[in-house]
Length: 130
Image 1 (tube, rainbow, N blue to C red):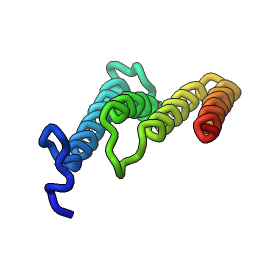
Image 2 (image 1 turned 180 degrees about the vertical axis):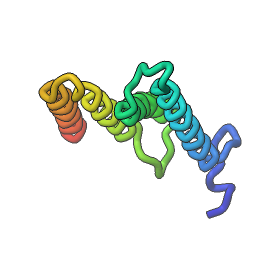
Image 3 (image 1 turned 90 degrees about the vertical axis):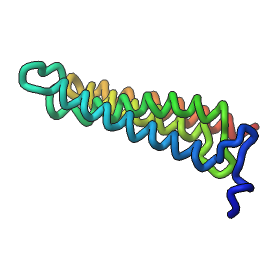
């Protein structure tokens, strides 16, 4: 493909826009990992070490929800749609939240996952109906 075919109205190529989104996501993931490790240090211990992955997964899901909003404003032709990115963000946030709630009661974890997956199934079905 020629570069001329991929240039948008503002002169920036679509490839560089998607690369910058990916770079933002990598940066956010690195920051979340660092914050998770800092919060579990022996002197601080706000998060237990086995909760670090739940913390990272849940907050990265929230980042994906924000990213879906950015994609909705400037969608690209051959990229995953904003609804799909939003759905993955909700699922990641739900898995992270369920993992966190598992420390208190297994039933709460199952309820969070069932409610979120049920809502996503209903929304996806109504989107297909149109």
